[in-house]
Image 1 (spheres, helix red, strand yellow):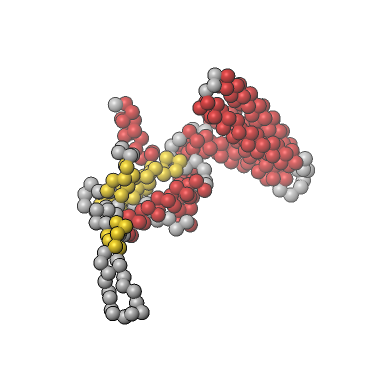
Image 2: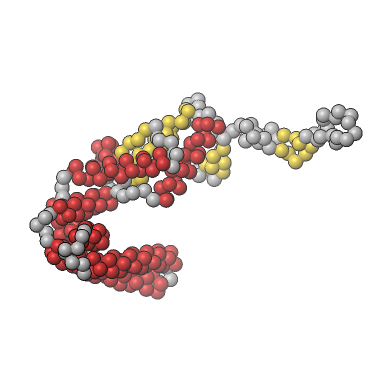
Length: 284
């Protein structure tokens, strides 16, 4: 429990009669302060102010938190989010002694997961296909780079046209959005230019050089993934491929939590476990 003061002093106490010691005037406690009364306050978005936190039943707290969309490895944004939640959870359990039931739900079915799983499966098939010669892989890599550059150019033209239109209309909100999209696109284009440089350098190697095929495959992986998905993505229909992809990055996420010293959730659920419930809810 913490205490708050009123800004006033009470009568002096602890006067020992020692002339070398000054009397102590203790500060007056503000007993009307909810924090001083041992209450946990939380910001209530409905009232716009801090309200005393009251669990529905006794000291039992049920806490639900959205988990990640497990299509790729976690990044620093995930670390910041779940570390913050962990600090708040520890305060509630270790300091205020609430009995917290903490649940995280991962999104394990999503367009990004489907796309990334499909691309990785097609890359795996290509990498293991011994009938694809080094020369053919070089040709595929160069084609993939050119197709990616053409797509990038088209997108840049579209963003700039939209930016010009909203600027003429003096729509500041949409202008800011388009400027942000253009900035993001230029960063992606710079990465694509670096990919092109690495691909062309790898393509210039002799097929007899050690690990030439593996080096080329790594350099062209990003652009090859997009090309293969455009041409053969519809052929990947095995649900096990998508499930395995999601489980892999879910495990990585949990390992990352452990590495950061973040407590595991009491309950871990997944969107795929509740698809019938979601459909029923949407149909209402």
